[in-house]
Image 1 (cartoon, helix red, strand yellow):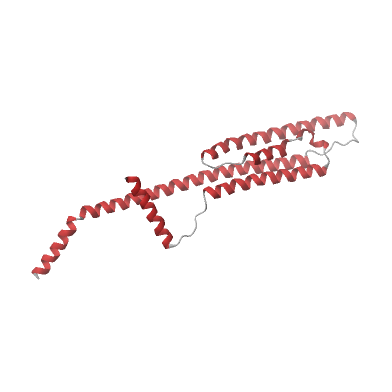
Image 2 (cartoon, rainbow, N blue to C red):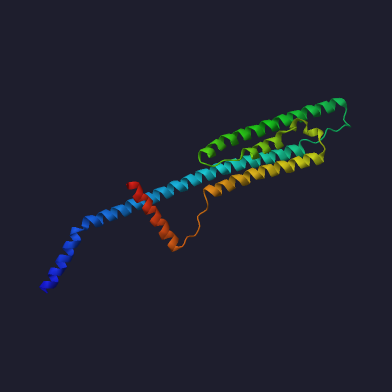
Length: 207
């Protein structure tokens, strides 16, 4: 019994000698957990903010598309030549005013897109300039004289505008998915491997 008691005391004495090491390891694990949680929270916040900006840009692009369809198909019908000259002149002035309002609205939304694009650039996300240029070209080119075009040409222009806008929206979400891919289901081995890599990176940063 005495030998058993001595062995127990010796065992606890050895544990006591290494208690500082156990405490240190526990502290390191806690710090690592906090660091991983912080990085994950930061990554999720950045992803959410970027997604919100991209959604705002997409909304503006779709609004430009809707404005353009309404203008090119509904508000740019030809002037009725059966009207007397005075009425035709009034119609012409009205068409020019409508095109000016349309142009102002499109340019205002394009300016908002440009400002948001600058923010996206700072986050490593960018919209190809050629796609935005195509949208501006298709929406505004010859809009002052749109009422002089026949319905077929105006329909073609509307289709081109919708296509150009959808290309911008697609490029936006494609870029977002590339830099912020959706989380995938990972196996236990993949999770252990990832945690080990995170621990190694943290250990290297402490050096």
